[in-house]
Length: 231
Ligand code: OAD
Image (cartoon, rainbow, N blue to C red; front, top):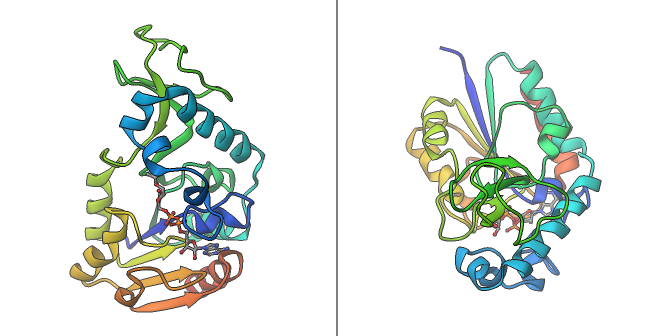
């Protein structure tokens, strides 16, 4: 059986590309209320506000470029003698921009538009409006293809299967506050595979990892990947 590595990434991996994290000082959740911009109820109350929040993030993400950590993960995927799955909580496209192909966006993507009526998807324009209509069913129920609080993240079956087949689980740049992603380390431990955390500081569930490397992703991730590839 081919060996497999599952890698969970969070906002910390994109921080050095200039994209703000959520819970660090001055982060997105210090500036906006989660219930206003990241819940279905918030969208129903004020779709203009929610679209403008994601329009701004989309504009910022399009200007951003991958950093050494994204590049190292793409290198791992290309050179590792086995399978690598990147499960990202990030809605930016920086893993793909660095060349990674096996990327699962469990919280959706800024570059996606989703029809709240017929559930079809298409490429998001730079600026979305509540009056935009679905190219498939014509309903004016267009929303960003983002998984909000209270909604089911994408690809859970694939992720569970990957964690069952993997021989290593790594978590990079995530605070471990949001489930189900925060629970992957416990699942990996239950499956008796080694776990490693790479983060600026210890995360919520930091003690659950077998190994921890603290520092900026652009430094600790390439060093770890060079070790993996030369082992
Ligand atoms: P957070 O903002 O909660 O956590 C970011 C983590 O990255 C923190 O632990 C930081 O210490 C770390 N960090 C910051 N800069 C770093 C750097 N240069 N190198 C390495 N680590 C660094 O972001 P997430 O854990 O990704 O969901 O948040 C998870 C989910 O919560 C998001 O996907 C989003 C949010 O609410 C939804 O919107 C549904």
